[in-house]
Length: 145
Ligand code: RB5
Image (cartoon, rainbow, N blue to C red):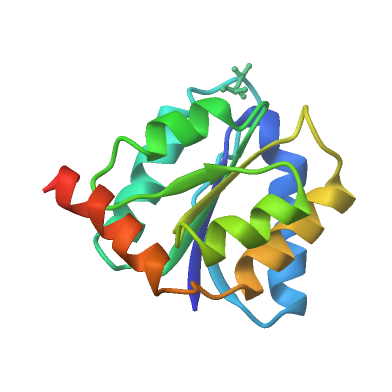
């Protein structure tokens, strides 16, 4: 599995924490910034990552900003992206099992690095359940088409 990860200036610490986590989990990733000393615009980071996941270059994406909200709104504009804004471990598991989410968004001003790590670990490890959930996800995909 290959992950594309990015953050704006509001999510840089958690981005570093998650890179460490993926190193520990032996998961390949590429960091798409930001290298920001000043503030940047989150769509400039969310949209390229979402496009790389949508076109199959990367299997999944992780996006962090201050709240995670801007990143998730932007990522979900890209066709084929199912991005979940997650701040608890239960939802991290459920959104993989039920929604087959391919992008995870989190907010560094909302949760700490320990919880962010645990959320990302569970989200990375959990498989889609398929079955009745596949039928539901296909209704979203069909709507997009
Ligand atoms: C940046 O100040 C902040 O707006 C951004 O990180 C994010 O929270 C937007 O949704």
